[in-house]
View 1 (cartoon, helix red, strand yellow):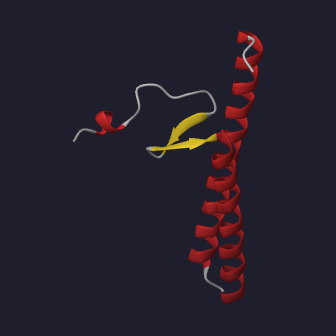
View 2 (cartoon, rainbow, N blue to C red; view 1 turned 60 degrees about the vertical axis):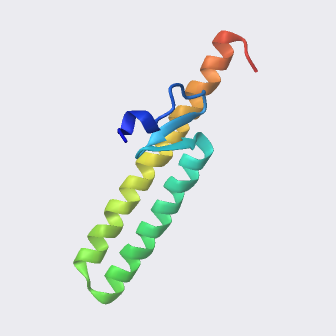
Length: 89
């Protein structure tokens, strides 16, 4: 089955596709925060054990989490602006 066939034809305001998965803006923000925490734990373990690879992996997870949280924030702002313009609540 083609990937396009699995994707919805329209996505409502407040939801978006992230990694092929349909997510709400709040879910995106929470998952981003989750990745940041996971990354910080990896960084701490890497520092404690002297494992540079673990520290680097943690740094990458923190950066990904920040980007994902920012996507959720931006999506929320777009949703609010769209509602204001269209007058829908």
